[in-house]
Image (cartoon, rainbow, N blue to C red; front, side, top):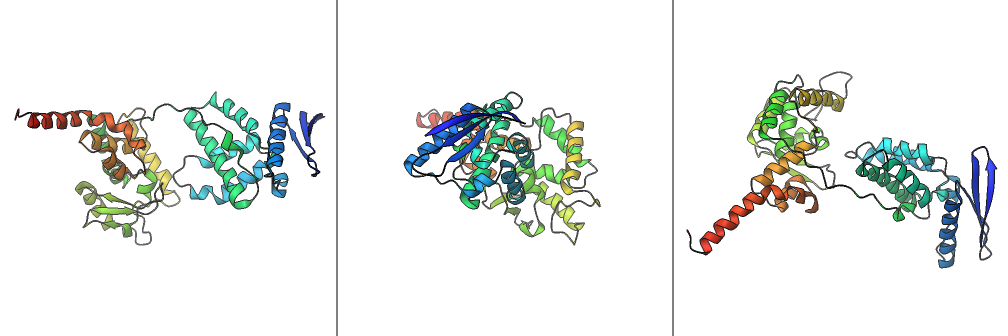
Length: 347
């Protein structure tokens, strides 16, 4: 049976939950509100009654800060395509870092989630939740620091329909002109590859000469977001650019798009050049990832099916490419009209 004690300390009023049940050693935890204490007590009592309660030594000894510091060291380096994972981890450390892992309750997480939703878009809030959830899952299944992941019962926020921004013909021409005249020796080739293959920025910047076959007009991506190998078809203009770069390639580095500038990271050098070209091309509300959307949109408008678009982009399901289906409406209507005319003998 649980009972609750109100405590006053340096951090203000806290509520302590004490559970004594079934002859077990008392379980004690302290929370900011009585509601959190009651929720925790209900969960523990239910687990005890089901025989599934397994309090771990680590959950009592470790904090959320400990969890996320280790996660930053061991797991975040694996997340090459995730946006700002370190920032997301640091946010949770700042907000909930002092809590012991067994004190990390659904109520505490929901409170922070709802506060964050007042300042950030729902999609952004969901990324914060996803990182904390994955960290807790790793702590539960691999490190044995937690008995369960409290985020399994925390709902993600509803997100608006996926953003689709693609280049008009005039915008495309302006961007390619600015990329070609850029002082960055690789910007034009990088933009051209993104626009014609739909590859992600990280995938392109990670391309190596050993994975490119210019005679066969293709390149192989080994390290993709969905962990599956994918082949890029290289159109003739891309092959021409790569042949030019091949003549002046560095012999000490197999990366195709490695920087020639001493002391400057390849990604930062590229980002400066990309932002400058984008600005001079007068592109508003446009990100590098939108080149991927542009590629998919061009495919749709030229009659590619959703399955074909998914294959080019490397999506495992068709759900992500349905956003482009409306662009192929005219193509589909043309097929239906031609078929109907033939069947009805109008041709």
